[in-house]
Figure: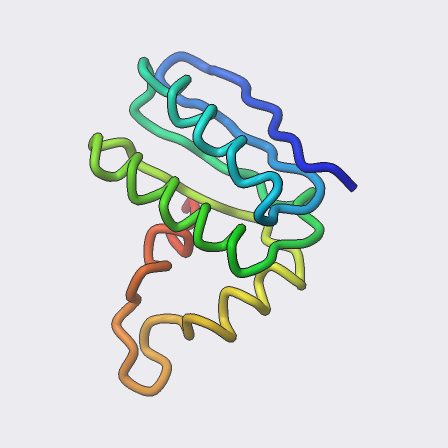
Length: 113
């Protein structure tokens, strides 16, 4: 399945709904989204339709969240599917697991209260 992202703006909040498979071929879509977040203060990413993510896709998400954070935009991801969530945990165990302090995925693990 091809990768796409459905952005919706609600005032200063941008809601993203990535769908499909995030890999090397689709990672450039994240760069386009970054450019469109000029007026936002919060970016909420609903991950329930992201069915597959490989290592390059994960690196793209880490980079995307980091660039938003560098612009003082709050990034939240929620409703992770099993495969992307397992990849996230396998490569970067969650904070607190065996002394891990969050590392590069801390922004991807920030969830909405």
